[in-house]
Length: 95
Image 1 (spheres, helix red, strand yellow):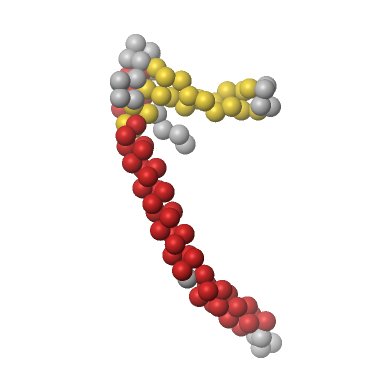
Image 2 (cartoon, rainbow, N blue to C red):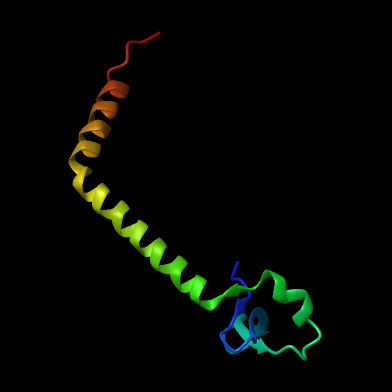
């Protein structure tokens, strides 16, 4: 779910989905609202600052890169384990 974003100027970027015949279904967009909008007081407490979203994206990207590195470093070990398991499964004694 896309969060409500608190922009540096105090406005909120609010996600919304609407039917769009041009895309043949649902289009996901956002709308920016200011403090004068009736939904602002309700949405403001849960809004995430834009800088925090950037930090989260960068953190997820770094974590994904670390995972990718780990998997590529240990790919041969994983392949060997998979072959061993397959071998064990195909050579099970009949019960």
